[in-house]
Length: 287
Ligand SMILES: N[C@@H](CC(=O)c1ccccc1NC=O)C(=O)O
Image 1 (cartoon, rainbow, N blue to C red):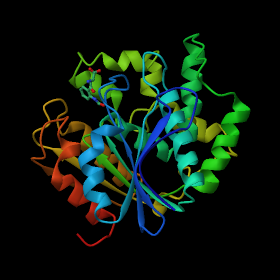
Image 2: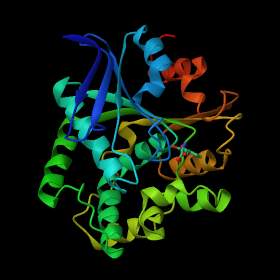
Image 3: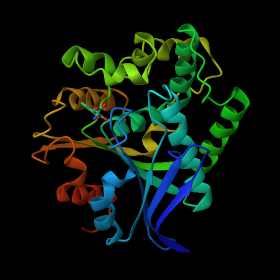
């Protein structure tokens, strides 16, 4: 089975849609791409990856982009739950056993959150409750449990490729106090503090109290590797966020490498030819 440039819905909202740039069942790799845009900018969609998909498609890599619902209409952790739902949909529809993921900016945040998605979603629900906010887009616990089971059963990640990402929102706002898009996506300070492993305070505590909790990452940390890239020409994010992620990956024992190179401005990096070549190398395919 193969398809080229197909748009498929995975939910009721128009943004709950994937773009299958190309899929051929005999391709050896499948790359899922997740766009940025500060959780809210409608100008950022799976189309950000047009050039990347064209290049990787010519190298026999399946490329599928995920759109997800945006803030302020929805709040964290809805973006992450949409990405999980899309990944389950893709892995079941295309029966792909192993996938790799590339994310740009907050798309990279979503990839980091995937590593510990259960704890992060749990803390996300808690932050909404603490803020007295009802998020109608959230599934109930039963549906959430089913989604988790389907993800664990169907999705095995090979490579996480982080492109000029945001990984510690507390530190981001210290460095860039004017980045108010955060407040459209998170209902409170607690919500964005507990949103990633680099700044959470309760992530571990939940770990401790809840003894039937999976004490490793949501899947074996050694089962996948990470690659981090940051453009020296990124005018919206300094190297700091990427440096914090590299420190975390090292501490967490997640195999990783990184590159810091002139790959264009923040909204150009994901279109840069050298990012495509780097991803191809990381996918262990001949360039
Ligand atoms: N264009 C977005 C802002 C944005 O996307 C952004 C700005 C600074 C640093 C990172 C950003 N995006 C990350 O996904 C907005 O205007 O909300």
